[in-house]
Length: 184
Image (cartoon, rainbow, N blue to C red; front, side, top):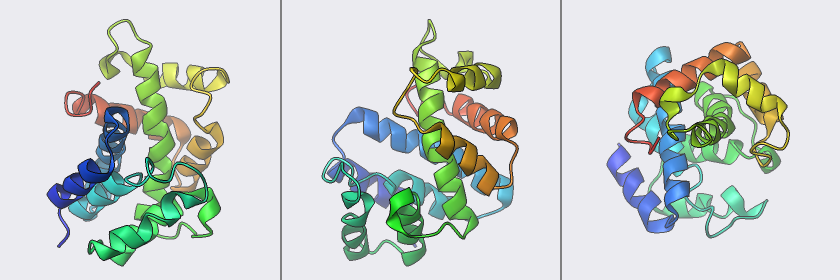
């Protein structure tokens, strides 16, 4: 079995940016919470989330990320289903999102980053101050966190069959429950 500890080692070896490492932990928090909710393999879902952007510093441009990272993960023994989920999180990869893990990773990637941005503009810079209503309000402000795709957030929730507000609330709560570990 491929473990979270091994995934963290790979993440730290290939990712030097603290903000990108925090992003991986934030995505992991949301994805793992969904794994528990759905009764799925929490460890595998954690590994997937932690590694989804491990190659971003080496290959920051599409379509190199995550395509050029996948063979590295394969050589490190990362299971095929995890590698496929990582490939599927990029809209341009040509890899469809079929499994619940693939859909969840996509749905949590941009949203966790957006929630983090919402927290960082709060006076205390803590996710504890973020509520779903404020996230929805900030989504309407196209100048705020402009690099975050609102379409991906909306489409991610829809692909999971979730109401957008419920998805936002679930992820906010997951991140609040793990605030210290994710740097918020």
